[in-house]
Length: 165
Image (cartoon, rainbow, N blue to C red; front, side, top):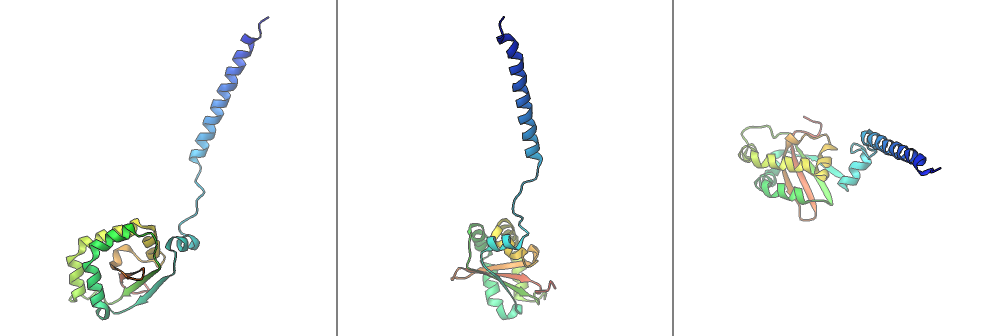
């Protein structure tokens, strides 16, 4: 009696079961959520930003020359934001009195609105900058300018007060 013909169907059946089991395992693995570190955790934000984010509130007119220079350099700074992966220091400066329509800063913002939109997109696309801004509950629409310092830091100018006004 030849047993090889009797064993063959069992071998095909075992292979078929193995293929079905592997297919089922792959399906379950693809549908289960990934176990990754959440970006909302404070430790994750600190690891991404890499340094403490400092905030201060100043009157727009007292820093008008810095703000105007930063607005003029917005297109170049938006490009630098895309290329920046680490910073020594991030300062966020709130400008609570920026809503005044007759100021030179308001005029510069209106004239450079396309470049400022580009800067906001660059910040949104950068984990470093986005989490620095987001960690202080700042809306991207309130970012008006960004200034690079020579010592490896950045100042982000934001419309409104530190309390969200």
